[in-house]
Length: 133
Image 1 (cartoon, rainbow, N blue to C red):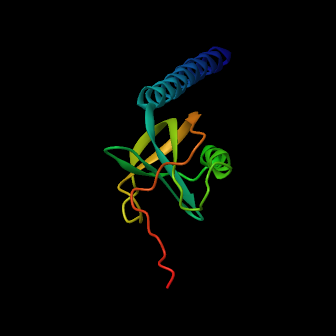
Image 2 (cartoon, one colour):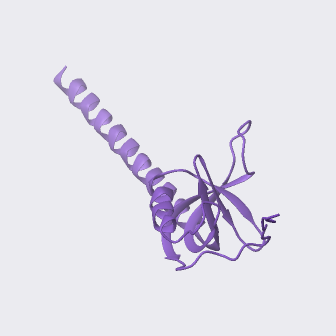
């Protein structure tokens, strides 16, 4: 009876160790995959109330609203002259498709690192002047 019990304990220990190795390997793969998908982006950043956008020369991404985005928004806030000013930035991040049925841009960037923030806002593409008559 003691031998059967001992064999059962050894078998459970071996199976448990194998499962722990599989979980550790899976976690390491997920971290490595996320690091590979990180890219650098240069564009103009705009954050208004509940939406953020990163606009480059050939892309426009919605920005995930999280702690890193709020850090960037705080840095940009002191540079903006007007609430609609866009500020040139360089960031690192991951691009994902928007969840099905969600509103907003088709592709979303999750900022992982703020590399650089310009000292001046971008020039407006279109300037509207009021006519005082």
